[in-house]
Length: 169
Image (cartoon, rainbow, N blue to C red; front, side, top):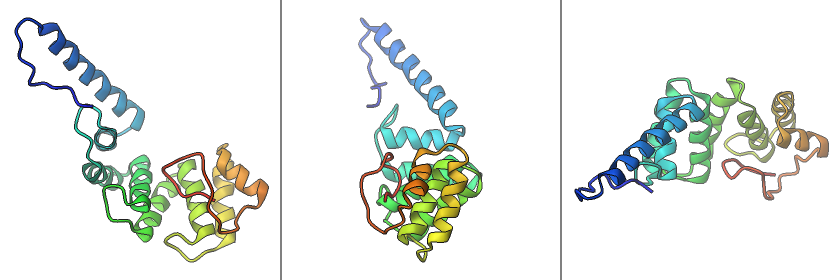
């Protein structure tokens, strides 16, 4: 929920000051956590922190971050395309952005790319490529990828997953 910065009652200036300080703390925290300003702004829009929740604007900011080379932004944008969250659902665009994030070494993106290859999301199904990406993610201790390799779980069926921002097997 966004702070109401139009608050002007003279008897409670501390309330306005607290709101402004909270806004600054939230912004700094998001920027630190996401590693990039555009990604942080996208996250603020996605979660309705400091600004009103707006998934289309979040996707716009994620694309800016992704084009600036931020793998987290590319991963989140891919997830938005997969879910149709703020953008029209497009499995090919989801795959495109996940691949960019995965090629930057992001283990969650590598695991999701393995899922995409397994299920044929935006790409022709390829069990060998699925396992290759899961191996890369598992080397970085990605739990989902390790589980997929252990269970040899490339069977094309969806079930619940540890992360709402990615496809699941």
